[in-house]
Length: 271
Image: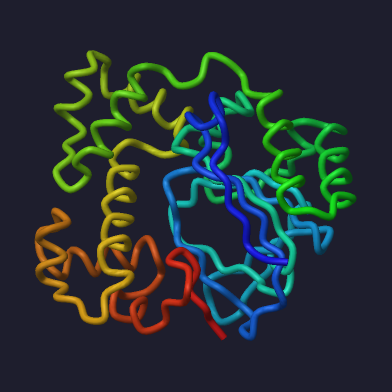
């Protein structure tokens, strides 16, 4: 049992940030809030035959999906059920990475989960069966990496999209999409359509999400936070602007996040 994380070998490392295997006792809390990230994810539940996501309200309406899904990138936080998170494997894609794997319009993945079998058919079912019958975490991760490497499609991302991703990552707090598009040489419409197809959201929303993630990275391990300074350092107009953006992406205020944060920055324990 445990939590194992590996970085993939080339060429997968250009598309995938990490692969992970989680096999741990059930959590004490029932729900967790999962913060949005710029890349999509592959989830394979080895404990139950489904994955579940809940609405962010008091009713907690449940949306059920197959045990192996590709989902995201999410534009807002999601609520998950910790009862199914006893033995789960996953893949964290770099922005646009899942497009190179599936060849699908990445916008179709936004805020929804698509069954892996719906994309890859019976070989996806066979993958999960192999993983279920493999006892060692490192061996499971090796099987998953080999399966992914055999299915990556070329070409990967358009050079215009790669350039935009690099520029936004370099200075998300000052990213201006208009000048970036003019530098690339495409019309706003053509660039926006290409970016949404390969990354899953418009470039402005993507830049806002990357800036939000920068705030999480900056404050997560602090014992106290000067939110006015964080707002200015992060490129926000003022603290009120930061609070508005934080609530939009996470579903909670910055101070509520700091009070509820758990051992993992992307997962906030709920009740």
